[in-house]
Length: 273
Image 1 (cartoon, helix red, strand yellow):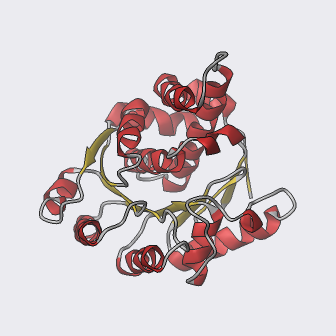
Image 2 (image 1 turned 120 degrees about the horizontal axis):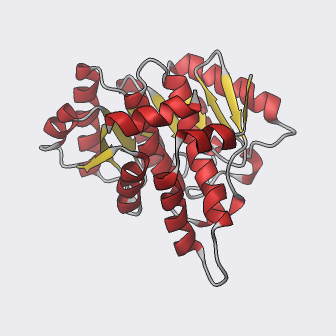
């Protein structure tokens, strides 16, 4: 399954419209190219409807919000919905400010989201309408651990069912659920948290996987999450003395570029609950 999801991305070269934050926009574009997709970046309200019309899916990331980009998100989202294109929301920092929280909740309310991907704090904010997110990192009290895993799986399943979206919670342990099934994924390295934008990159790549696997969206999201985590492991194994987080970022992108279906199939570490 994982193997086929990646191979479908390589074969179909899905075009993804990204309204993402300016901190990580270049890395998102490069990861999409590395996994076999094709990126377009546009948040201009007068431009987004035309751009999203020629793409297969829409990735919305609220990391660097302004009123201009919010208008672009809404217009692109409504156009994508009209065309039946999948839409992903990455609620970066939801819970850290009223603007971020309110914008994420409004997007969730007004758009038929296919996937919502964030850390556990951000996802809890959307589920409960408020939160305690500190910056863009998960609140330490919200980390998914082996000790609270059963409760976390139940929460993610319930929110997926309630929101009618596939929920992807990423962290030390990743959870991906459509409300019925939950993938518990244990790929990745803690050092990935020292790089700005691995989550943003994953959101862009996830949309490419979803567009390329329209009949297996849950598996596609899980495969994308495994791909990023496994790339983090491979990239770390390739680090040399003197390398730091800038090199690590590039090694992760290179690992995705060189990833094949067999490597992903063998390296993906997950269970289904």
